[in-house]
Length: 236
Image (spheres, rainbow, N blue to C red):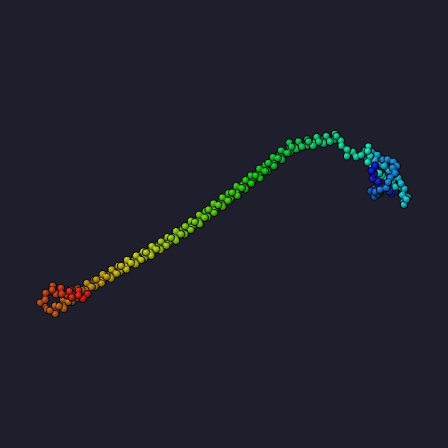
């Protein structure tokens, strides 16, 4: 038989009856081998608690030993399996599971499904938003590229127009200058011809005057005119 020994000593010892109490400071664990003297009834209804009385050699006071032993006929009822209690425990457990499944499990599953659906919707919305952002960025980049190309084309066109206008103005200036030069040369040439003609006429007139004075009045005027012109042509 396995036993646990408790030594109780002191003057404030209570009598050993069922449910007896002791002061905590009066409890001393002892490993002495006990001589079973009498039995007490435990709170669980068995007789696993035995007592022994012994006098201390040092103090002369009585010492009381308690021995709690495991008995084959008794034991802790909380360690025993009651079939009825086990059955009712399982019944309550199953009923609790059914109740939770009917009134709590389905709402929980529904809530989880709704939460999953909201998460999926949020992911789809995020993907659509990202796709729209990418499309918008691509469209913006395309517009910017077209604007750059258009701007460059306008710049090139303006440069070409400026060069064309410059060339045209230069050509017109050259043409106007040539026209003015030609007109000036023509005017100068006309003036020269006019001056020559006037000079010829003046020389002719002067020649006639000189001839008349030289050969007097017996010379034929037509013949004299012919001679003067011939002389002037030879001078050229």
